Structures are given as structure tokens and as C-alpha cells.
Amino acid sequence: MLHNLFESFNQAIRDFEYDYIFIDSIFLTIWIAIMIKYKKWNPLKFGIFTGFILYFIDCIVWFNLPAGPNYPAGTYIREYWIGGIYMPRPLGDYFWVKFGADFMMTFSYAMFAFGWLWIMFENFFKRNVKEIIIVTSLFFTFWMLIPLSSLLIPLNDTQVKSIRYMDTQMIAWSINLLVGYLFLSLIYGTKKFGSRKPKTILYVFIVGCIGAFFMELPLLIFGIRPTGILFLLYNVLFMLNQGAPYLYVIYDKILPWLFVKIKKSSHEEIKITI
Image: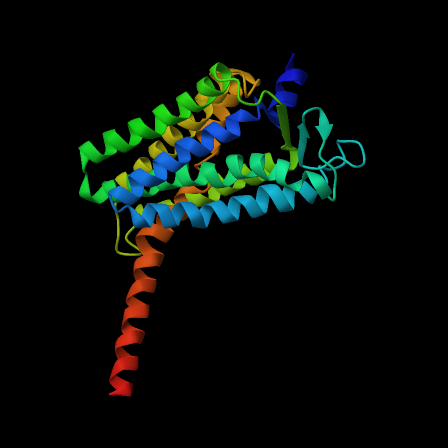
């Protein structure tokens, strides 16, 4: 029993029909349209930026990185079967078939999750409760409707199975979370950086848990992630929270500092030209 439990933790599985990808793209288009309508440019740019990072790690690095000594030779961290066909390396004619699944699981995921995360970061300061409720409701509703629509609408029932072998990743996730929140506690829990706001640490953690819960619950309910409640709880704690502390510091400290530097450089350049 314990062996099966640990094995399920080490293997993050997704099993879904290919039309999930098409339906996801429709809801993603609506999500982006709403962000554009309400001029949420920064959340959009944040989603695009993190989307490229996730795509590079998951679809390029992990797809080509061996899973480790616990698995047979030729096993990689990220593996795919589409229509029962194992995705080879190099992909050849299967590139675009796999790209659809890659885009959905990385870029689309980032546009939803990290766009929402940015808006939650903004509202730590402006506290627009109406905006929090509307954006969060849309985020959660869309992510519940996507797998439900895939099951109800028979567009393309080709099965896609994806496995991420996490033996080597779970340690990295744990270290990222621990170091990230120690870093956040140093900046916002002490007076060393002139920004002692202990509530910030709790807020970032709660938002990270809520975002991960919204992403993982539909996968469990609709049988896409057949790993059970304990794996859901693990992902709720670790999935977004291993990156949320760093992203908040980037949002609150680094980006404003960069904008000031750029603005100052532009003014100095204008003075020199004049």
C-alpha cells in the first residue's frame, strides 16, 4: 500500500482526450479577450513570460532529460502517448500533435494561472474585492468547464497520456518552496529591507494554495489525474508555492526598480541629446 502511494506521488499522470486541447484553446481565447477588454496588460505579459519558461522546462528539458536510475534505460522525465503511440525523440511527424498537448499543459496553463496570480498580487494593495471575486470565479469556472465539455462533446476522442516522473523533481520542489519562503520571510518578515509586512507572507502562501487547488481539482474530479486526494493536497501546497515567493518579489521589488532605472536612463539620455 505504501509502495503504491509513493509511486503515485512519483508519477504525475494526465489522461485525457485530444479535444480537451481544442476546448481549452476556446476558453483561453475568451480569457485573453476579457483581459484585453479590461486592459489587464501586465497579467497578460506575465502569463506569456512564464508560459515560455514552463514550455522550455517541461517540453524541451524534461522531455529530453533521463528520468534517472530508478527507471529503465530510455525513460525520460516527461513522456507522452497519443493515440496509443509513444512520442519518439526526435519527434519527426509527431511534432505538431505533441505541440498541442504541450501548449495546453504549459503555455495555456501559465496564461490562466499566472495571469490570475498577478491580479491577486495587485489586489494585496488595491484590495478590489469585486475584481478578486469576478476574476477568481472565471478562472475556476473555466477550469471546471474545460474537462466537462471534453467529456460531453465528442470532437476528437483520441487518448493522450502524459507522465512526469518526479523522483528527482520532488526534492527540487521542496527546496524551492523552503528557500522561497525563507527569502520572502527575510524581506517581508524583518526590517532589513524596510518593508516589514508579515501578512504578505501568509497572503502569498494562501493565494498559491488556492491557485493550485483550482488547477488540480478538475483533473481529479474528471479522472484526468488518477492519483487521489493525497496527491491533490501535495500539489496544492507545492505546485504554485514553489515559485510564488520569487514571483511576488519580482512583482513587488525587482520590476518597479527596473522601471525606475529605465525611466532614469531615458531622462539622462534625453538631457545628453539636448
